Image 1 (cartoon, helix red, strand yellow):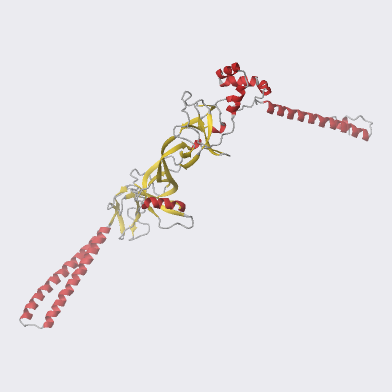
Image 2 (cartoon, helix red, strand yellow; image 1 turned 45 degrees about the vertical axis):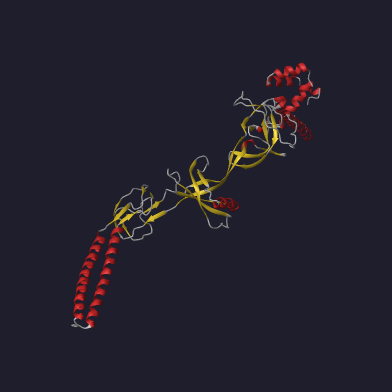
Length: 465
């Protein structure tokens, strides 16, 4: 078989021994491996070069101003609230059941309609009950006539007894007959009332004010007295209540306020807590703590005139327990936390910031009480604080020409903040000639940055960094 021209064996001249062929094959293999390794090293070197020669933007170097958002520290009330998840629970949910049996003749409501207490909802065939009432009335009339006759006979017997014409036994028997007829008449009156009541039950009425639900029967259906499904369910909508639970640790605050006669305000919000649905008051606290969850149930009442609360709806309750007045308030977004504790960045009139340690108190979703470290009127950074250090230059894009009021003095005993970029920039300026300092002060931040980059080597020789 002739050797393949593409194989390594084809390169070995014929007539050579097996040892020479093996050596030649190894030499060719080593050359191929070497070429592959050289290519790989070239690719790795190229990647390394590209990765380490890309320009890196350094924020805040040489006094570069950082764009930030600021807000004023104000003085005002701080509401103390408890937040809880609640369920809208109607004060009354009634399943309207028929009191008598018979076929449904008509309905006088539509599904979802608002009905009043006493409104007729449906009518059951009244004819059997009318007939029963007539029968009971006839029996009553007959027994009343017998009673009247017995009373007349008693008067005659009394006259005869006075004349000693009859025995005392006959008089006593007539008196007993009158009592007997009176009892029969009383029984007939009860039968008439029962028949009239059944006739009235033929008209099914609403027991409460509320919204009618979905009908459970149709016209012509035979209903039974007290059947489980009923005819329709009426749910009271106005007023509406919300039942929610709070941890047992907060029950003392609530009971103290309620025992003092305070009406605690409760706001109901939707699931996202962005839209307020209704405002009401706390009406009741459960009599015991649930030991399985460590919570206690509360009920808040809402007027619900606009029907914003729907039965069994989940809502977020904000229960206002108390309000702290004349508090120093700052936006929650301004608070920073680090190794030195809680601090904020205070904006200065020269468009720089100072790091200020603060102590905080109560908070809500927007503001937080500052108990130490700030005064009303101070301007603090609320956006972009993660890019700042003490003494850093800032700019306010929203209002670039707005003047910043002088901040309040830092409280006595507060530790000095670590040196920042602005301090290093000032030290660099001091090492330059006065003429050069004045020239740099007249430059824009971009021009100063370009100048420092151009003279970086010279600054390093002078010990600028």
